[in-house]
Amino acid sequence: MKTKSIMNARLISMFILMLSFLMISGKSFAQKPNFSGTFKLNESKSNTGQGPMRPAFELVVTQDVNSLAIQRKSKGRDGEDRVQNLKYTLDGKECENQGFMNSVSKSIVSWSADQKTLTINTTTVMDRDGEKMEMKSTEAWSLSADGSTLSLEVNRTSPNGDVKQTLVYDKAK
Image 1 (spheres, one colour):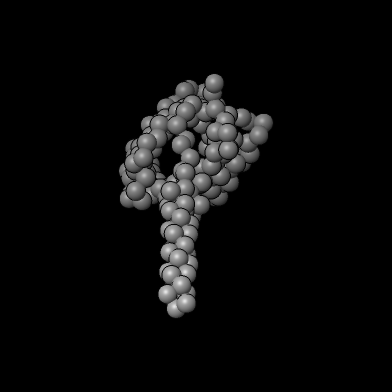
Image 2 (tube, one colour; image 1 turned 120 degrees about the vertical axis):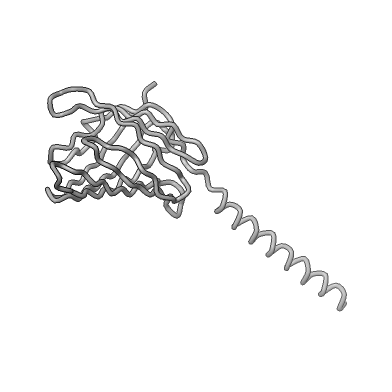
């Protein structure tokens, strides 16, 4: 009788241990979205906010396990096409990118706890005629379940004020 209860206790302990392992494994292997693709701005679904900063009309994104590369295509103030190429690491380390007008941007990329949202926190320093201006931005990227819609929640803070944008991009077919 004593042997049977010891065996039952061991079986229950093993079951609890296996169940715990499966629960922990499921969380650590949560599928992160892959943002790779070409996305076109859907202006009718977006809120571009106020201010001179126009959002990119197209994003070409390449992502692998360790990095994210973004080519942003936008229009300048005079209507000219602009292309900005950005590269980020996905390991939480600071990344540096060149911006417009000799600006330098430093960013840190992080995943949300549920691994579904990618956040890019950036500080950009611009130098205009010897005067430095700092702008901070946060972009929270999320992808629809079917991968056809990319949403960006953007917050920018600069000496010129704050801008909030909700940008919706449709994946090009």
